[in-house]
Length: 455
Image (tube, rainbow, N blue to C red; front, side, top):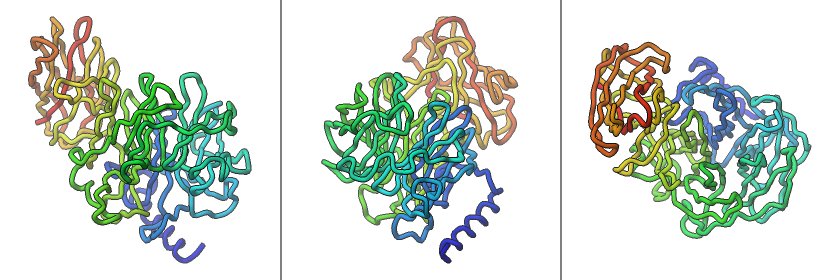
């Protein structure tokens, strides 16, 4: 271990001690200033697991990434470092500075972590738990150098409804391959992914690295950085749709160019990450290099909500400091940005925003960690109801069985497209509260909720 590396690990140790050793509180960036990057979040059981690389030092002038990290969280706010995969534990068998992006899946009662050994090879390790210990079952790369005509890196896995698992990988030109049932072999020759248009942060005719796959309502989404395309078939062809990042939805502190000064495409570059769903909500986790101290080779990671338009397209995300899983009573809360729900769906609203539709008696929505609430706050709901009997919103603490804080009667507003502001006072404590909105009423759809304000 050289002098620079010793100093780095000493600083990391001190840093962890100063912030209570193992558990960290995050907004955006998720955990700032440690080089947590290339985040890929998957849900196993009741927890989120982030499989990430990490940039070695803020002094890096090139990519120096010496191992891989596993972080876990029960709420996407409090994160704990629970595992490290070192290259010595893989077929590499020695220290390695190119521990690049990877992805983990659960199948056959085992956990398979696919990783990039730099830009040339993709390997796989296996464990009985999502945190290891990891074993390299092949003793060699799963996808060796030269298998296809692109850099073989940045794997992402989608297990489809038929139980088959598919890997997408590559740089600028993507390939997809079905994995064997053992998850450590290829069931076919990798096939090029067909795109009707190649576009990305480098302009027309060029995509990016780090492809990813997710599926929703029968539509396959191929994304590269923040850009994406859709298809009814996992192999494509895919139809280009655009980027989920737009300047108007990005707050000023995330528009700073700390990497390449004057780069007009900075906002879209190096957004490696993935889309995932949890608690009836969709999220996007991605790289960020906008904060002071960050650079092109020492990056952070963010998480944002993702919402889908009625035609299946993804709406632009919001990039801001608050992130996900927490709220500020000083700002309006968009109803669709819940952290958990039951009996509701999200649809487009008439103003091209989104609304949450409560479909039956007993449906509920969770908004945990609402900060800066005054004692005995007044909640205002922008809501519509076409239900002839209207509905009641019960505001409860923590969950639907929690203490009743107050009730708000929602009368028939004259139609589902007729929204009104309706307010009621609740008996909450001052400061941070976990709010659950429980909808009560007769049969059928009860209400459509646009936003919530707290005074």
